[in-house]
Length: 218
Length: 218
DNA sequence: TTAAATTATTAAGCATACTTAAATTAAAAT
DNA sequence: ATTTTAATTTAAGTATGCTTAATAATTTAA
Image 1: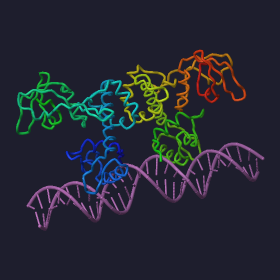
Image 2: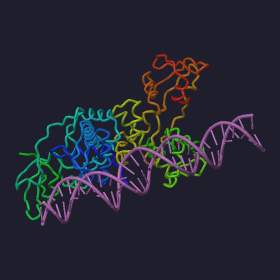
Image 3: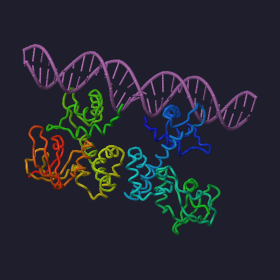
Image 4: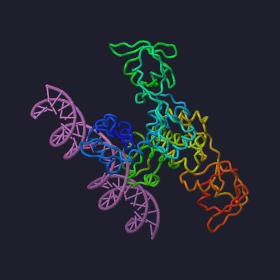
């Protein structure tokens, strides 16, 4: 029996809203690895608490209060990540899980102090933007997945997805980090894998891997 | 309805064992502000988990495993306190509550990294010793409560109790900190209050306050 | 546009960690 | 040694956040 907190629900909802500002319960269930039934239960409670708008069989929306709560959770998470990576020296692939726990256990005061100490960082170690205390996000450079680069094109890494530890460990090992330049040498149609150059060294990467690394838009 | 974790029970038990290495359930209940019945419940579970020795109506003991777990919790707590105070600049009276939450949400790896970063601190900001990873405590200077000093005696603060935020806030305000010298100018028999000198300034303090500040033994 | 598949909800049940009230045991006081 | 008091345990009950199974609504596809 797991025990996901309301804060986790709000974060997941916030991060996975569609273009209409809605999300379906099964998405939440999948992201949290729990049953749909548990999600229905919790949505009713979150609605009663005033964090979401819930109508049976309809898409879920965040209220203003819910959105600001969720944004603050994202802020907490990302500030912890910067701190763990830059100050504590924890590697890329470890900070996400650690921050996932710490984000629920720190006062706003502590988060603000960390933010000052880090001189108001705008991006976390994976390139994700950090909401300010007022809820504003820094401008985000246009970017596209590495998988969309053409042969012989070069671009700069500005963001990587952070949900899989082994993914981060691997790309870190082959030299991929933020601001690193990557050149696509060869694209193979049969499995969409590609050969890339990092620091002059060639590597073969799968399409799935390339889809989770994001580079600057020309 | 509160929700005290097993880790909190173990910490409280560890910190309040008597000379025989035992503790009564009502002490635990009082420290955690929960009912005796809840404590009985949990003690059975902790016994089943192998952390305590429990026999109906008898004093509770920690097993070796329970003691080492509890010692580690104390270690986590105090390392967080040093970190919050020295690195983050959080005031004396705030670090205890913050550490109380963080101690449950950090990996051993993070604690070890913080310890290295802080260069293996031996005492927390209130003067309490920090167990090493191997469970060893630094030598503790002999000390006695300030309330036991005679008139015109001077001594140095080496520890203060940390369980009350307003207490810490107040003594901090009147200039009491670790390594500070205090002189007792006058002791009043009727209520055991005393006049003390800190940095040349006179202050009146109650007996209860004086009992929670500890100074060097001659 | 109806059937099939997917998604969401309800219902019943479980574990955890508490509560209060009643019963039992131990300790203290006469 | 007996009574009184205090501490402890048991019993019954609650809220939370999950589970699986059954049912209902919606969406997709033939």
